[in-house]
Image (tube, rainbow, N blue to C red; front, top):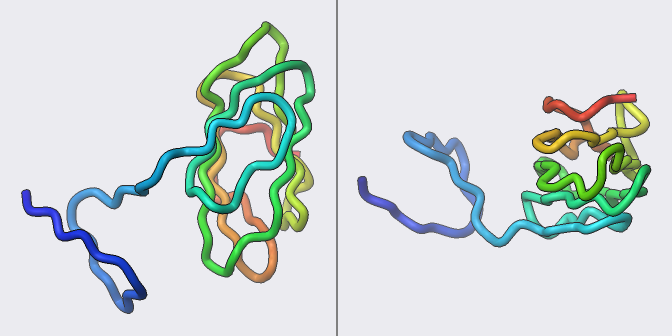
Amino acid sequence: GQTTPAAGKFTNMDVTGILKYSGTPQVLTGAGAVNITTSITHLVTAGAGDALTLADGAEGQEKFIVTKTITTENDTSVLTPTTPSGFATLTFDNVGDSAHLLFTNAAWHFMGGTATVA
């Protein structure tokens, strides 16, 4: 099929085919800040209870987080966003655990995934 690259603001856009997020995912090893500058973050655990943070995003921003590697059995990553809505933390403790987050109404909302919601 034909690909038409475009940038900028779009209104009432219909997408047929695949909607793909470009850019290099953040790879976060151990504790630290999940960035708000890329759409995707891959987690690599470095211990039990790696503390992760997530700053407030921009209205309508989506963030996808996926556990890529569990370094040692029982390693976990625990995400605490600055402003969550409907949850306090997300725990990632298995390879493939994921979270789809949406920043709207001045807070991060958990839209789905396999991370443990608390």
